[in-house]
Image (tube, rainbow, N blue to C red; front, top):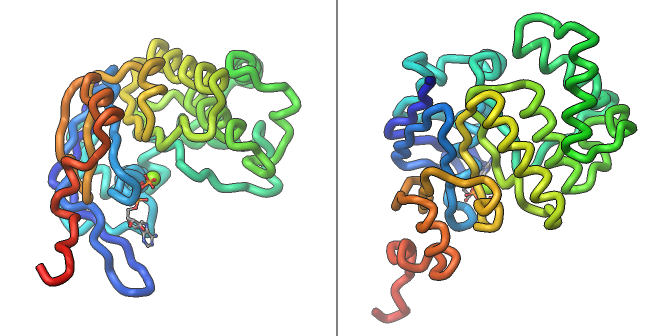
Length: 258
Ligand SMILES: Nc1ncnc2c1ncn2[C@@H]1O[C@H](COP(=O)(O)OP(=O)(O)OP(=O)(O)O)[C@@H](O)[C@H]1O
Ligand SMILES: [Mg+2]
């Protein structure tokens, strides 16, 4: 079993208006085999947490720690994090012009494993995973994310997840923009990866519908840069019914003249 531990994490971002603190003391422990859902209002810092785990250079860690089995993740380069078994599926994945899906996947697999995959087995794995995700074979020859529809981008991310076999996956709004069938296919992909590799999942979402397919063990409510409440799956239903109002009292501006 592996453990990803986030302790009292404070993160800021450089903007044109100066340094902006975003994460204000995040504590979170994820073990392999566990699924954690993070829900919370727009702008609360969910994607910032995902990018910080992945090592995006735009985000500065001011204090706190992220460790993987005791190893300091923050001291690792982006590549080292991937090799250590961390995977991020981004909310807005970038285009890579001139690089086909096939070449991208093979290069990523080689980088993560430290050696090229044996060609025959690899081709079969790619074909099987694409079939499972109901992706046309021709998709493999397209350039990464170029002209991909929202749903194709998300399927491509889950394809990477299935093939790279990370220990921990952070999925940032993998459900947004998916039709009902695609949501099911993508969720099945995540569940398959969980079954095959026992991976730990951090699932960032605005909607409980994906949690019907990918069952969370824990649900965390993210507000103003930290976790405001945690619970089991029932907390997600409560949020869907009540919204985030009861967490946002601090953000309410006093009426004029008060
Ligand atoms: N690179 C950046 N430059 C300026 N501001 C940023 C940057 N990255 C994040 N922020 C700000 O930090 C705050 C948190 O953003 P973040 O994307 O982490 O929120 P989120 O919880 O993922 O929101 P959503 O639910 O809309 O995806 C926002 O106010 C955002 O504008
Ligand atoms: Mg976000």
